[in-house]
Amino acid sequence: MNNKFKEILKSLRIENNVTQPQLATAIGVSNGLISLWENGLREPTMSNLIVLAKFFHVSIDYLVGLED
Image (cartoon, rainbow, N blue to C red):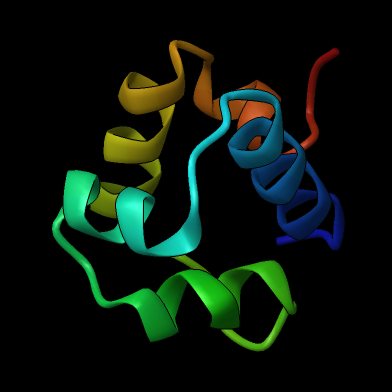
C-alpha cells in the first residue's frame, strides 16, 4: 500500500471532526491501531478498509489513493 493512505485517512478524519478514539470505537478497533495507520506503521486489513470506506462514504480506491 502506498503512503497516501495515511494522509487520506487523517484528512478524512479531521474533515469529519472525528477523533482517533471516536473512529476506533465506530469501526471496532483500538485507538492505537488508528494511530499506527495514520503514522504509516501499520496497514489495514481488507475488512478494515471496507469498514473505513463505509464509515467515510468513500470508495476503497479513494481511501488508498488510487482515485481522486
